[in-house]
Structure formats: C-alpha cells, structure tokens
Image 1 (tube, rainbow, N blue to C red):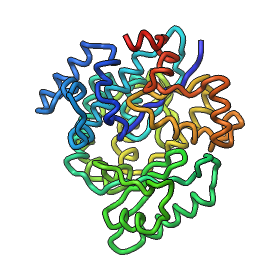
Image 2: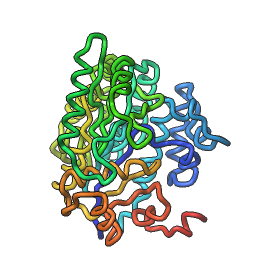
Image 3: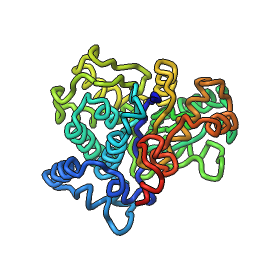
Image 4: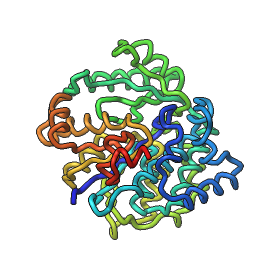
Length: 351
C-alpha cells in the first residue's frame, strides 16, 4: 500500500474543460442531492444544474458563490473516490479555498458543514468583492529556485504598498508563482512596472478578490458571525495549514481551528509552498495526490517540492525524470493518472 498526502485546489480551477466534472466523477448521489437542497434553501442554483449546463459561462461559473461550491464538491468527491485498499492517506492540505475542502476531507468538518462553510464564504466574498488578484512568476521556465529574484519582487510589492492610496501584498506563495492581491491602484502599478514575461504575466485573475490580505477583514468578521465554532471538530487525519503548521488528530483545539480558518486564513498570506514542504518532510509520502477539479495545481506542487529540495530535485528536468521513473505526483483531473488514486482503469473511467 502506498502512502499519500492529498492536496485540494482553490479558486480558478473549475473552468470550461471541467464542465461536467461532478456528473462524471462525484461518487455519492445522495450527498450531491443534499448539497443541491442546501443551495435551493439559499436561493442559489444547484450544483447539478451548474455542472450540467450545456455550455460554460465565465460570468456564471467563476463567480465566488458558484465556483467555491463547485470546486469544493469536486475535491471532496475525488477524495471519497480514492481507493483505500491501495492508498493510505497520511495527511491532507490545500491551496487557499482548498483549505475548506481539506477540513472536510480530514473530517474536521462534516461534508455538509464543509459545504456550509465554503458556500457561505464564497457568497460573502462575492458580495463584497474587495480588491483583486494577479499572478507573477519568480521561477524561470526551468523551475530552478531564484531566491534573489523572489526577494526583489517582494521588495517591489512592499514599495508599491507604501505609496499613498496603493494596497498590494503577497496573497499566496504558490510554488514558483507569487499571487499578489490589493486594490486597483496597487495592482495596476505592479502591472505597469513588472517586466512582461512568458507572454501572459502579470496575469489578472477574473472574479477574484484580495484574498488572504487584511482587506478581507470585513468578510472575516461576517464569516465568524455566520459560522459557529460548533461546526468544527477534531480532524481524523493530520491537516497542514497555510502556515505550514500541522493540526493533529486528537490534539487539536476545534475553537482554535475555527479561529484560524475564519481569521488568519482569510486575512493573512497563505504559504502553500510551506504547506507542501511540511507535508513532504513530516510525512514523506509515496504519492502527492492533487484532487480535481482541473490540473493547474500540479505545477505549483512540483515547484514547491523543488524549492523544498525534495528527493534531490533542483529543476523541472529533475522533476520530469523522477516522475517518469516512478510517478509521485498524481493529478486526479487527468484520466491517465486518476486510476493511480482510484484503482480504476482509463477504460472504466471512459465507460
């Protein structure tokens, strides 16, 4: 049996290619019906209707109040589909909104309570839509660590943030990428001053707010008022949070977990790179399984492992050679890799 750390993705991972993901892969029709009923009770379109739409709508499917619930359900469904006879999950983590999914996967929240948390926070953030986010790389195409470049970029961010009327901060340390968040003045200044790279960066993220910055303090307050600490319990599996800290089964304070989830996690930088470093070094898994939807988080996981010096890897070529010799990164959004986690063959998936 192989050991695995499961990694849940965040916003921006349910896109056109992912339309129909829940219909294809979600393993529990009764649980999906409960999620749909909860959406109806809130006056929202059901996940079944959103996922089963004839065509993808960026304006509809990427809204925080829709995207968060779709991504949560896809991630949880994939976690429930992992073959427990072949894979032993030793820890769970996630990127940004994926923390909420990780809480449910680790049983610190029930599936329904996790849905309540993610649906509530997605709606509150969409209603407020304070600020925005953009993405910019600090690693080159070879994925070799370049700490001086990263430090220079963060210095530039701090310099912009110090200007009158400008807000800009590190939102997510995402492997080889910096996800920056701020107000329009701060974001526009960085876009104007950062050298264009790879033909698409700096890249503004649509329908995203200034997540993981103190601009989200009003949303955090609303979330704490709407979501009771009693929803949270002891995790059944170790949880690695956005600081790289571990919440251990039987040794975690549910009140503190609520406080972190609806406090620090909302208003402070999310260090996904540190989460992967801790997961690798503390649990030394055979596999890193990235749940769906989508496949975009795999690169950030690989980059984070390189930055951690994991298994002697120091570049993209090192990772590709290691992955080809014995796959350690499994993306459940790819049919050809999904079976490594679920025990199903590609033919069974297609049928």
